[in-house]
Amino acid sequence: MDILLTHGYFLYEDPKELQIMKPYPPLGILYICSHLRNKGFKAEVFDSTFSSRQQLWDLLRQGPPSVLGVYANLMTRPNVVEILRTAKEAGWRTVVGGPEPGAYVDEYLAAGADVVVVGEGELTLEEVVPVLRVGGFDKLGQIDGIAFLSPDGSVVQTKPREQIKDIDAQPWPAREAIDMTRYVAVWRQHHGMGSVSLITARGCPYHCRWCSHEVFGKTHRRRKPASVADELAWLINRYHPQMAWMADDVFTIHHGWLFQYATELRHRGVKLPFECISRADRLNLQVVQTLADMGCFRVWIGSESGSQRILDAMERGVTVEQVQTAVALCRSAGIQTGMFLMWGYEGEDISDIEATVEHVKKTDPDIFFTTVAYPIKGTPYFSDVAERVENPKPWSESSDREFRVRNRHSRQFYRFADKLLRSEVELRRLGQKPDANNTSMAELRSGIAEARAGLRATISEVEV
Ligand code: B12
Ligand code: SF4
Image (cartoon, rainbow, N blue to C red; front, side, top):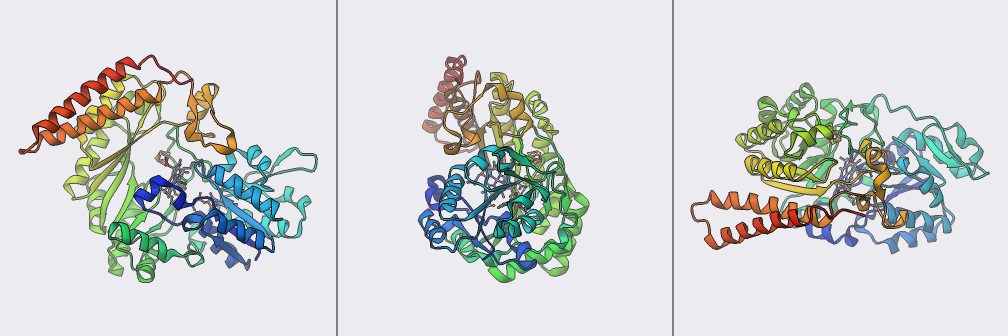
């Protein structure tokens, strides 16, 4: 074997996901695997999703050691660090890539990575693997898009790797390298519908200040509609899913593309229910109707805040009204909406929280999720608050999600904001039902009063 690829996500160690059970395969390393195989490398994938770390340790220790490539994102860092350490001890050469390592080059090198890959992995690994296989470390300096330690211990970072020009020329992800049927089966068992995922583009040109652009920068490359339609048709044939997730950042970003894709699906007689993410400003009547015609049953929208002031501070490039219109359009086309909301962005005060509550009540999405903003290293938001960022734990045991931002409201404050939002929305929904239970409504009202009192009481509590 020339390279073993893995990621550090172990589903059975994730109590939250065990409740949700909506796993998807790691497309990034599957794209790398198919690329390397096409170039004649013996590439394999150890898919940690359904495995245990002991199985991975056994494999690494059993050898013979080769090159191990590990995908890392901000949640998997502690696992990835442990994988790197175990692999090194067992004699493997190690390379790490994905959306996080580019922001923490020094740390990943110190944690045992021989090479950190910054940006897209395919072309870079094609050059890195032969060098690591023969131990010709002196040649690393000639490879674009990497960082490594020189013999004197200093960090060398080579020039950025050019992105793949024609992503249509790339092979589809090597799904046959993993047990794909298990993903589909888990979905079917827990949700009555088997699901598959695919991506139609790379990179997002927007510049929301908290969003990580580590891998693709602010570029945008799209696949041809026909190729995506072929991949979906192939997935249906091969895995018999009942739905798909279009895992793009903004599936509806290019309207002309979307209409052509719809035509390609129609020509193939393919219609599979699917969900996707969109920006509100990339949805209009024609787009929403096209989505519905193609089988879209749910659109996820990053709404983030009901306060225009905060949306502008985020450079979100969307108005509160656009979100409200987009959700209404989806509803009228029979498409459900899911909304992402963020508390605690810089400058947010109680009036912005109240605006968000009003916005969600008015918009009434089918589902919404909230999160307290966290500054991902490498983003403009991180730079804005860098001087106030504290990590309560050692780097190798934590993630950027655990950052504390000094002088920001306390976690308790945001728990009250959340309670206020959920109770207000629930009360509104109940109030619309003719048979609404009076006791439940009274409980919600008292919850709302408690949440508002809690917000006022904790307003001066700040993160330290
Ligand atoms: C799909 C997706 C998910 C799915 C994951 C399903 C799966 N198993 O893949 C779900 C919904 C579960 C998810 C969850 C989360 N996600 Co997510 N997700 C994405 C998304 C939209 C697409 C991923 C994808 O398939 N990309 C396409 C492939 C081709 O790109 P890629 O994976 O980056 O791989 C390329 C390079 O990174 C590199 N590479 C990848 N692996 C390796 C390995 C080696 C050895 C090398 C050398 C190179 C290399 O080469 C690849 C090919 O060019 C990305 C954004 C994006 N557009 O990438 C966010 C993204 C990865 N997610 C992100 C985040 C923050 C999360 C969550 C933390 C969100 C949350 N608050 O819970 C969780 C973490 C879950 C977890 N436990 O790991 C961030 C990561 C930021 C960071 N610095 O780590 C991203 C970048 C979004 C963003 N812009 O902020 N996510
Ligand atoms: S949040 Fe979405 S729209 Fe904004 S930059 Fe990130 S991927 Fe693009």
